[in-house]
Image (cartoon, rainbow, N blue to C red):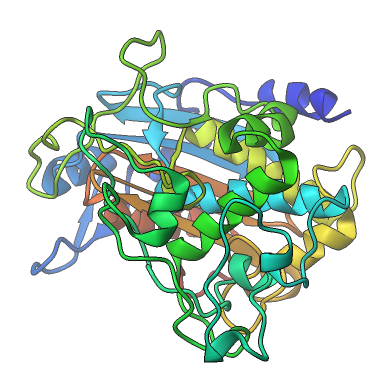
Length: 374
């Protein structure tokens, strides 16, 4: 049972820094926009980049070995995960494939009920498939979404897909021949959201909780809008200037593309589940065959749900997350079981996360780490 794994993963997490991981607090190289690179401590980096808080979880041998939070946060503070949501949605979709409720290589219009991709000359001989949507090779537009102020009227999923009011994004459409080239598309993941709902006859957030969040123990994570009152700490988003995001956060009805609230500890549990599945270990989140499909490039830098690069010990799965006011990054080397998750509540969070990742690669002697992809 996956619950047994969750308990073992949890017991290795720690709520404060240990001497083994303190090197991440020093020796960071950051380069603020328009300025020369600097060699600084983590505390200095937070101040220079005007990042109110950052939370980190590191992974060693498929176990969470260290967690820490800096600034106005604890290790259980939830952040918007941005596009890291896509990896969670992808795992849910792949589990439905393994259950026979979805197919990787079938025309998705044959499986959609609530909405259909408009047919064009581009789709006449080249169908949009789930594999193409997850790998960003389906020829779909709309790279990302900006969200909505708290209290605003939110569009339905069909309104998002059609780009009709009150949606503030364009219609989701095929703009390139499916299967021929890579193009980053949050819009494609909204089609995945529709597929998951239509296949399960359940709301997306409810089904993903059942298929992914609960099995791996992501107890501080949820898809949906920030609750008005909550016992859980919720990070408030900030602009690159350091100012608080007007309204504090953005509602993201585009759940599969960017609607997850989570913590580094929870996302580390997801990465461990994928890594263990890749190696064919007991009680897998996915079958070994499916995990290996997920970590195989499909006509671009993406596997199924995240970017992948390298081979052998250097094979790495990675995903950047960026919503307005929040940025972060997660990655894991499935062969060695080493990885990291970083989340920050600032539009400068990627600069900080990249520096922490490069420092961790050196400190923990990771396999070769090349270019970081979205």
